[in-house]
Structure formats: C-alpha cells, structure tokens
Image 1 (cartoon, helix red, strand yellow):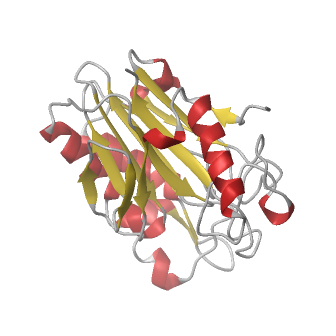
Image 2 (cartoon, rainbow, N blue to C red; image 1 turned 90 degrees about the horizontal axis):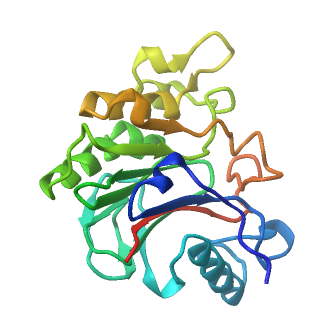
Length: 246
C-alpha cells in the first residue's frame, strides 16, 4: 500500500510529539479528488475517504480510530478533548491525552499546529480568514496555557494555505485585517493570512524562532495540494494533524 505523502514540520521532532500536513498524493481517490482526499464533506466515496484517513493517520504513527476531528464552522471555539471522535461546531482542539491525533481539514485555509513538549500539551486550529481575524490561534494558545503549557516553550507550524499573492478579497473582507497585512497596490485587495497568524502567535508570546511557516500556496500549487478556490469548489480536503505519542 503506498504511503500517504505528508509534510513533516520541525515540531514533529519534539519529544513525544508527532505532526504533519497532508498533500494530495498517496491516496485511493480518483477524479477531482485524486488522490489523498481526507474530506467527508465532499462528493467522494466515503470508503475512499476513510481509507485515505487511515493512511494519513498511519503516516503520523496513529490509526484513524484515534483521530479527534474538528467539525469546523469557521468560528473561534476551542475544545479540550480526551477521546477520539468528531467534535461538531469547533475549529480548534487541545489535549494532554497521549494517543490522540488532533485533526483539522483545509483546502485553502491554514492548519496551525502547536506543541509544548515539556508540558505535554498539543493543540491544533483551523484558520481561514474568518477564524484568523476572530483570533482562533490566540484562543487555542490560551487554552493550552490553562493546561500548563508555556508560550516561551511552545512551537508552532502554519501549514500550506492560500498565499497573499493569490488571496484576492473585497473590502468587506480586507477591512478585518490590519493594514500591514493587506496589499492594496493591485485592482483588488489581497489579504495575508500567514502574516497575520505569525503576528498573533508572536504577540501571544511564542518566540519567532519557534514559528515555522510553510512556503507553499495551495491555490498556486494545485498539483500538490487541494484548493477550494482554484478548483471552484470541486476538490478534496487536506488535513493537519498533531498528537502526543504513547
């Protein structure tokens, strides 16, 4: 069985931490969902998605039965979890329980993965533009601190997502971003999700040296990533996952 193709961030090397972000390669889906589609919200066959999720989880040292999956709504609700399953209506999960793979889906939005290995606390959040400006990442960090994590020790990874160069928005969206993260030199504004997230992580107290930002753009690299915007909504879903290894 071919292995799922997964990007492994630096924080995956922390003691007892496993983490990664999927590409679109190494799965069983076909057509528009070729091949590692991890989203059950698509029209792909469920049997394919479940097989793909198993491959993704196994690539990170877990099984699909150990996935704790956020049922995302583009909000800023954070949930502490101690068991696998689907957690509806939340966009961030945190845990101190080993053996759980916190999982966030995306197809232009970012997955932000967070870990304090010393405190054995991990978190993950789904950060599209709405979640980003609603400060889902700082709220996730605050929940982790409440569990004993320290921002000075915390490491963060911002996954591939749509880049500022390709994220054209209207003023009704641009006005929610700080001016420093909006390019108005073109016909329409372009907003910077990654830049905003980095600023939020640093303001929350995570050292800049502990923040890794993926250089990949989902919209501009559809050969390797699913992009909802570039593929006009008919596409698969990526996932970011992080967990404490038993």
